[in-house]
Length: 245
Image (tube, rainbow, N blue to C red; front, side):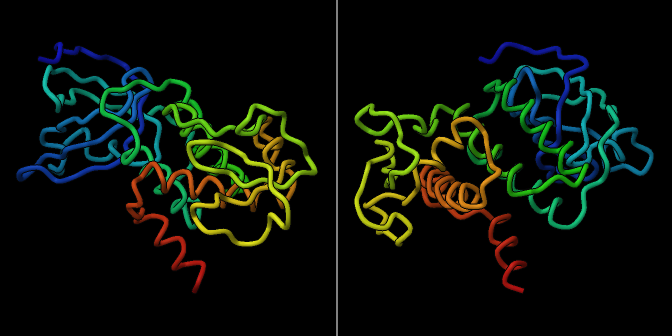
């Protein structure tokens, strides 16, 4: 049986909400010290509810809750402030981050460092900073926090990465030095083509090279798809359709 919680003033973000009964909501939140938590917000859909205008996605909140089951009871919520409303592509990218957290994190598994990365990403989106860099940073941080960290500064045999060397990144093994053109498409079992300089850039968080951004997107997409078990992401599909239009 889960221990009963009495939590007050917990920094959190809403990931997803679902209607429950006639006037309430089930709210999935990402909390700094508790990870992903399911809460029932009783009466939150009533016109005069104090929670009605508070439980918004992509806004920083302080929440109080209690309970000992899988779904806790939300007692109070308030806005922490300082976050502009997201629009356009920034809004769609924020949905993508939320979907990753919902699909890849376990309930009540705390990840304070990942929470801080998520919060920084939301603030940067609100300031209009470049979205590709924000997404790659979050994806890499997510993989590291969940124990799926990519090998970036050494190859599969433990040798240092050479910046001028082409590699194939083999899932579950790491970078493998190869001959030929690493930019050519490869079959899934041959790994993901990636340059040594890109791996070294990712290891230190340097996204200033256009090649690094492009190769990082391809590599991280394959790694995330692997850990999703091949299940598609709805937010990614919407982004792809908008880009095609």
